[in-house]
Length: 438
Image (cartoon, rainbow, N blue to C red):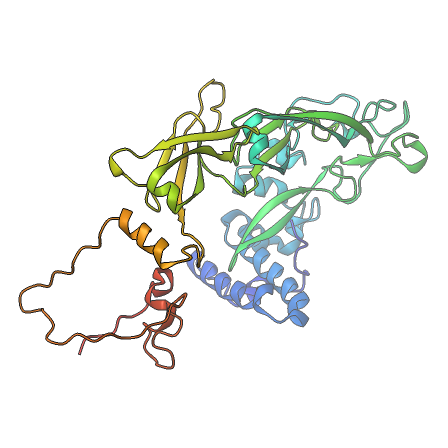
């Protein structure tokens, strides 16, 4: 718990309430005072003073909002919360009061928040926790590696329990000294802000003794680990990525995280797969998609050739015939079954989707009028324009033109929101107000 306000400060004055204030009034005053003194609400140069005031306000509320602690404070003052130092006799133990307030277990009162099986011979006789903390990190892989699978080896340096002292940190038969900071509990209690005007109480390992409640004198520390209880060790690990693995999947190396004498077993190293963007393929589940560029001639007459190189290095060839005058059009899709990604734990594969992109000839490919006429003769005749009733023009003008690449000049210089490329840019038009028709 954070250090209590000085004894000469009245907790009722801290919250600016009378001693007869109800619980609702205490809570209302606390919210007001906490918001006014929160460190995040003041300039940087005032943050230190605000932090002190905020802690005092938070602890005043913590004591006065509970009937037991408020009664103890009214009778003994802040002395009620110092062990064995109460006015007119020993005051109540704050650990006992907090145990009633928060339903804390005996391990909270004795300073052992971890629970678990005992660890004989350890400093302070602390109990052991369960499994240690996991270590998570991302691992980038290419689409080729996910298609074929991958096994890689790497060096890992981690903490392992010192074999010389068996994780105790001291010499054989050496005795530990109780930590004065936490009084041998191994933990300290503090308040932590969780929102505007809101705090919560938490127990954290003591910084002085690293949560053990006791420590060895310098002369009694293990010569090998220097009292740390662990040493650094390098190990070669192997990471296997099954073929067909996906973005976001996790590969677990069990028990390969840092060892800690206070844990019953070490945690795991967990790699999360991050799939790199591929220059040719897009992936969705077990399916792949790619663009297929074909010439105008191929769109009209078909083709038989290698269209792309797959992720395993194979050339994928297609024999596309166009019977009965059928043609391939831009954005049409060719589906190739069984040429997608492998499906894990299976011999099956997804499908490959090829999106057609027709590339037109370069300017000048028709070198003469005779060539133009030959092409025109084999291509379908343009349909005549048919006008609706009353729409036949009375006058026809032959007008000039120029070829441009975009609509950048459309409406240029005007304040019309439909000007320029906004005319054809759906994303840019999203959310814009539409002009009312006159």
